[in-house]
Image (cartoon, rainbow, N blue to C red; front, side):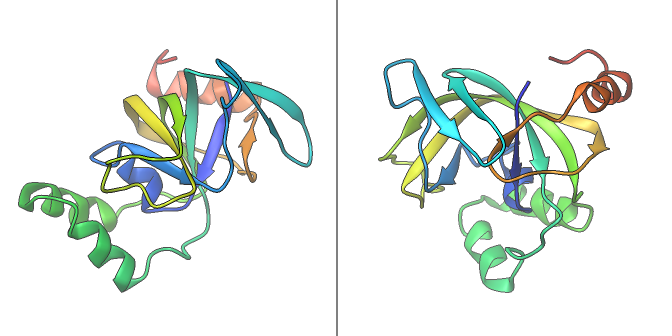
Length: 157
């Protein structure tokens, strides 16, 4: 299964109210399949696709302004949950999995800010994150990492 590395706190929010992942590049733009090419591989991402979510090591997006922007999009209960989780965010780990169901260039979602958005469904946040290096774009985490995901979190995929 492919993985997508996302900066925190955005990765964590995909397992709550954030229903879209913003990108400057598209997938699935040619009917049911779309090419996505990174520097190391050339492969297709079918839509829908189940993927792992990797929380990158970067903490660049965790500014006070970003946190305020996020909190304005959450109700009071969700704000409390987010602030508790915020203190314990994981970095450099696969934290869960979800389905990418569509790639859109317009959305009514309050979370949509990009040129393109990957719509998500069926998110599963892992009880135990699996630490591993990430990469830009989609990447293959490898058999050893996938085995650790199954051992630490049960057979989820």
